[in-house]
Image 1 (cartoon, rainbow, N blue to C red):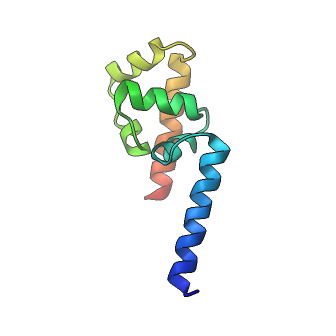
Image 2: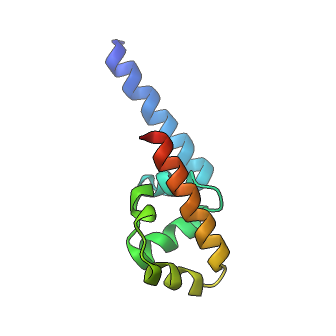
Length: 94
């Protein structure tokens, strides 16, 4: 097996492992990496506001934050904490 095929295989296995661990599709894996966001909250972010990645989360408007805090199980404090975590992770990766 050549090096590129081996690397691709390892990446695929890693993605499948994360999908099984978090119980979500691959499109939400970036969101479930945040503290306080599991598969259900990630899906709510996606369905309610169209958020698909951390960058989208860092660009939420005040109205978007209000919509989230209005959802069952969400609070203003939780929304702010998740956005703060997203900004820290985004800054760390840049």
